[in-house]
Length: 230
Image (tube, rainbow, N blue to C red; front, side):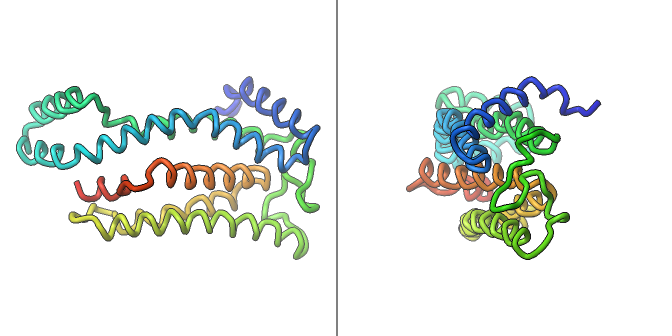
């Protein structure tokens, strides 16, 4: 039995929801709309996480000073950091919440789009939603995958530019920091391993993440910049 089998009850719910939408709009669009609806439901968590990240950025100089003051004294360091966050009513982990919440959702969508079901028999511009790029036949099918990967690459480029700008502005380089901006293109590589339906989910959720982050972090420095600077 696959480890993903424990997600089957949630997969059935997602399947029924996408199927219901597919009775009104094309299945490919139903996948996009379902993803948007779920991300919209998660948006309050993203807003809370953004507030937490901004608080961490504001406290970064004090955190750096505490790290310097208690270097080599882990117990005093942890106590001082805990006291600082308590006084400021902030959490060092708040920014991780949306990512953690999305992991189960991503797993459910991955299970839905990699397990044979009737949704994958539908098509997008003549390409079955269950088809992998390796089985694409003819220029038309390859072009659909190419357009999907191009969209993912465009979103990745936005993240790449943001990360590069943050890394360039950092005062203290972080080990491996030079490679971090290129992680923005990792979704393109992953999309090449999954069916077209999963690719549609990926391009929708990554585009949403980019837009949401730009909205919530406008007029503030990038989180990566703060991390690298500390």
